[in-house]
Image 1 (tube, rainbow over the protein chains, first blue to last red):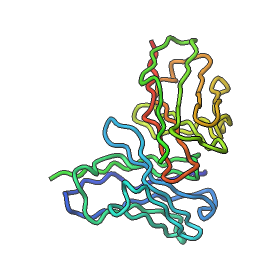
Image 2: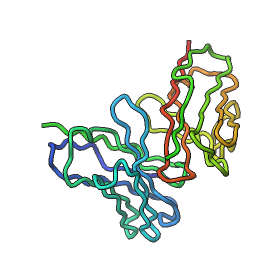
Image 3: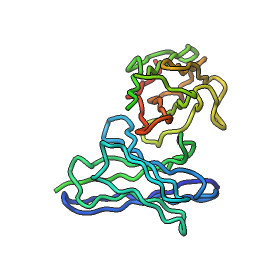
Image 4: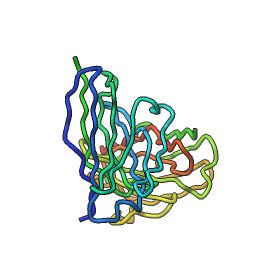
Amino acid sequence: EVQLVQSGAEVKKPGESLKISCQGSGYSFTDYWIGWVRQMPGKGLEWMGMIYPGDSDTRYNPSFQGHVTISADRSINTAYLQWSSLKASDTAMYYCGRGGFFDLWGQGTLVTVSS
Amino acid sequence: EIVLTQSPGTLSLSPGERATLSCRASQSVSSNYLAWYQQKPGQAPRLLMYGASSRATGIPDRFSGSGSGTDFTLTISRLEPEDLAVYYCHQYETSPRTFGQGTKVEIK
């Protein structure tokens, strides 16, 4: 089955670091971009950035650049989104998606940042 | 950055009615690199249309997309109760990619 499976929900404190994952299966992982999308509570979708696992070419939305890092390990068909210092405003659902337009979505990872 | 503006914010219609959702871009989306997604409550988004007018796999033919340049439309020809959702347009031509703010479709 072609799918993207994301890591589970996280509860963190402000200032802590976090790395969430998105594992692809059932297709050639290195042939498609993987993008990350933020959805804050009750709000719309925001495009954060994307990576091409084949050569690790990475693009960021300037609104998120410097606050998050996108990476990938093609040996295990997994893309990552990480923070070195979380803020309360990072509380959101994070989705990964496949391709330029997202024809396949992960189930989402809920990140809660609270003291 | 290309700003996408969707209208209306909310659409309230009865089953069987026609729904017309608009997405206007702040600059031309050449090559029609415009997609539409459906997000039902508590679920991840799902691709409906890409290339402005190509239906994604498994999407019923009551969904159709049209438009070019700066004006795009998603039409649901005969609304069904399961179409209750928020619909987003998305341009994937230039970086940063952007989404519209969404149109909520309510079923009377």
